[in-house]
Length: 314
Image (cartoon, rainbow, N blue to C red; front, side, top):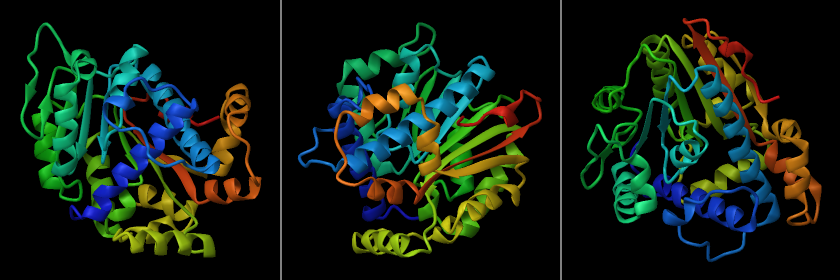
């Protein structure tokens, strides 16, 4: 996985879509405006609902993990981009003991600049007992770390996580959103096995494309290829079984994978009714088609016997 401009550009696209949906009122995020400019173009209602389902479902799983561990845990976000998750969790009193974001240097340099220049972001990192150390492309504070690394290079990743004070004995949640699909399957397998071997109590949450072998999936592949985004790991996105099996075959105890069409139906009904009133859909079929080509996969290893197997979207 190289730092291709096309792949790095997907961060800007996703961030712009999230900013647009937040501005429309799909969910609250008081921090995204400090990192992402107002979107110059309108996004389709189907896209907005898709991002709502993505953000909300990840939040549901994360909160269950954090409450189960009583916040005595770590979150490591691989390919974090301009995500605001740390600040949103802090506002809810759900910040973990340590939160590490990893991305390419081009991305972390920009994010460091935004954090340094916005007191609303920087003040949340302050701690009486620890200084904030900021370089051009990395940031270290008591509870939050932003570092650059190629996550397919396990040696490099390990060095950066160690420098961020990661404690392998603590329950640790790894989060990826549309990241692994850009990494060769063999390298992803090695990464997943290293995590399973190195973190005895761990939970992996992955949001990503699925059902990519059908006609709609092939169109998605061609559209991304036209923007110089090569999906080197697309073979693992053939269906929910291939998504799940790469965890089960690399040291993870169990988990589940469900497409976002089903996840959408599992989200809190009162909030779904609220967001469905924001914009009308021309046709429901397009939303269902879009949701059925993304999935939420989670896997666990539970040496401490916390009950991680009970975490689900429902």
